[in-house]
Length: 309
View 1: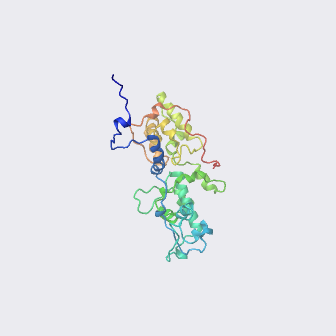
View 2 (view 1 turned 60 degrees about the horizontal axis):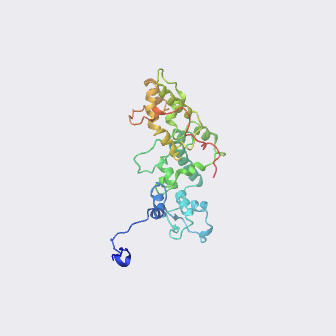
View 3 (view 1 turned 120 degrees about the horizontal axis):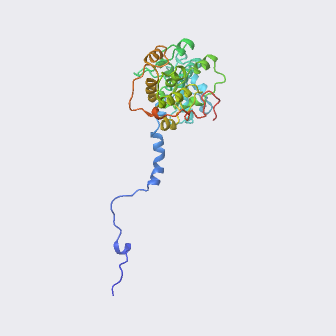
C-alpha cells in the first residue's frame, strides 16, 4: 500500500538560501524619513552655523534672539540654534574679535533681512555670497529707492554664515504686509517672480492672422498677467499642478511670444526691460499649442493678502 508524501519541515528540512527577502511596505516606512530629508535642498546642519558671540550669559535659558544679535551672532544662525532649542552639543562660544564696532546694529540686520526678502519675492532667490560666480542682477529699486547700494554679499553674509539656500525660503509666504512702507507695496504691485514672462501679454496686442490655438494661449497668458499674484505660481511655492497642466511656463511663454508678437514689439520690450531679452525658440516646449484660455493655475492663495498659519 502506497501512502501520500506529506511535506513538512521535519521531512524536507529548512533550506538556507543565504538571502533575505524584504517586506517592501515596512522597508518603505523605514526609509521615508531619509528620503524626505534627502529630497529637499533646504535644511541647515548645526555644524554649519557659527555660535560665536562676544560673551556668554550665565543663564542660557533666558537668552533671546535680540540678545544673540547684540552679542554678534548672525540672525539666520541664531534662528537655527534657537529652533534646535539651544542645543548643548553646539554651545555658544566667546569670540574676542567680536567687538562693538564689528557687530551689526539691529537696523543693519533689518536692512539685510529686507534685502533678502525682496530678492525672494521678486527673483525667487537669495542674494549670493562673494564667492558665487552666477550673481543675480539687483533690482534698481533696492539701490535707488531703498538706499541699499552695497554689494549683495554684504547683506546676506551679515545675517548668515552658511549658504542661505539651505534656509527654507518659504518663510516669505507668511510675512504680513500691513505695516510695510507704501514704496515697497507699490513696487511689488509691478510684478513678482514667476510673472515676468506673462507681462508682455497684458501690455501688447497680438499681431494679426494668428491661428485659433495661438489666440487661446494668448488669452490665457493675458488673463494671468492681469490677475493678482498667486503663491501657486510663484517659483518658491509653485503648485506641482502647474507643470502637469501647462508645462514649463517660462519656456512655453517665450515660444508663445515669438508666435504672438512682431520682432519690433519684442525689441521694444527688451529695450524698456519688460523682458530680459528677446527669447530664442525652444522647439521641445510646445504645450502652449494645447493651452485653453481658462485660468486653472492661479488658485486662491494670493500673495498680497493676509496669510493663514
